[in-house]
Length: 259
Ligand SMILES: [Zn+2]
Ligand SMILES: [Zn+2]
Image 1: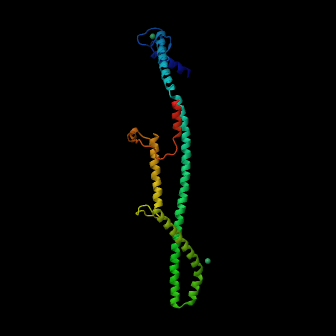
Image 2: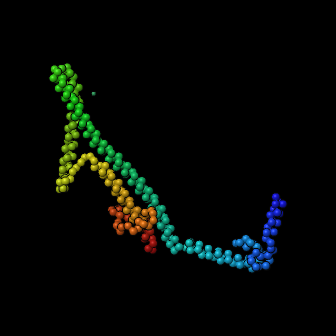
Image 3: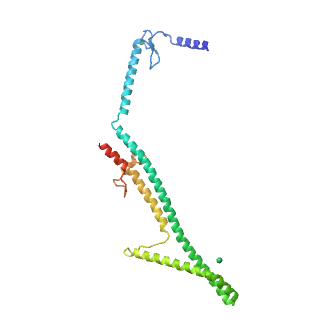
């Protein structure tokens, strides 16, 4: 290994023909030191020149660094950053609440529609049961089968009582609904049609549209759209519709920056 190092150093010496002289072209002065930037052997004068250039470079860097550090709005940016951090927290909280409310509305809506469905299904089942029972009773009567008639009468009576109660309740609920509907439709145009089914899904779909439209408007209004500035031209000068809360954080920032 020692002999290898010696060989390499000998090779260097031989390739650097004038190893005792400054490596700058046409300078024959003796070597002072290695240039800190170039790494080549230099005389005193050329060494000092390189150090001077390095100092200039350092000063230039320092100037740029100071400019980057000393932006006049650093303190404003700091306030804005903490406002935005609080904003992120609030947005997260609001979305959590929204999701919870949406979940509750879904549960409530599905349960109500299910209840209406079930009462209609019950009514239909009772009607078809009554029809069948009527047929059986007629057949037994026509055949003069008194035992069958008695058996049918015995097994039917209790069910008939219960089914009649259910039917009366169903009709009453319907009647009340129709009365309320016609009370509301007074004063409205005659074309207003009330439906008990079908509008719920449409209503939920409308909610989806409202959310999309509203959030798109919020994104636009708060300058949060992603993408190139192409959307800037179509930014309308409208307000976010019915936004209850003022944007608190930006307001805080605005009042700070006025000081
Ligand atoms: Zn030199
Ligand atoms: Zn029973």
